[in-house]
Image (cartoon, rainbow, N blue to C red; front, side, top):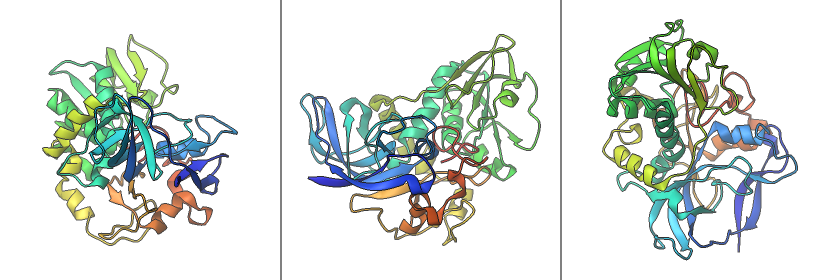
Length: 359
């Protein structure tokens, strides 16, 4: 039995991406096969496509997030056929990602999809929420300490603000001035427009979702903590600051807890702010990194839909977007290039939908 999947076998722009026919993956012990209903499109996919993570000569599958239904269950996997689930497929050089009609994941990388969320909303959660939560784990701050989140209006940044507030941290959000009201609604105690110079040595920790590097490091107090989203691109250590970068991992148990937060409205897919609701009114014309909104999206293939997460700094999308197929072709066809796929300042620099990082 064959299926369609999105892969690359050479590096480059959108012209390098292929929709190929591959065998439906077999399910092994401790695994589940998921029939894909929705999969998120993130800048990490563009980075993989352009060769940032290597793998020349290999066939590499695109797509990390997935929502769908369990299609087959391997021995020892505690799931049932027909269960509605979501999960994260990690790995920068795997032959098959979630941009496919079927995908196989380890059973412990999967969580129940929230009943209150659509497949498209559920598919936007795994990479961004796990990245935010695991970044906060790396920061290891205590209740009452101060945290600066750069790129706070993007997917990873927004979830980091929400989860940090729930953890009792005093959060300062750095983003476009237009996002101040939204970020306050998500739990930011303070706001800094990204056009301003950051105060020196002012925060116990910085989550640098925007990839500012040394500029963000300068805002960390002596002996504080800096965490970025791009392994290998951390600034050099100084002033006794602990420096690290996230290597996101699949964790079904953690994802299940984050899904419960989303279902109760504590994570933004379940409860968009007023700015997000205004931005959902459409339609909008594609172009300049802005999505086309539609209530009747056309499917990428018979297996599901693509979810578009934020790409442009200063133009975050607070709710996942189901794309017109013509919009998705910006990633898959050279005649419809998306500016954020070309490695510019809006291009892929890290994981998830961080403002200033990508979708």
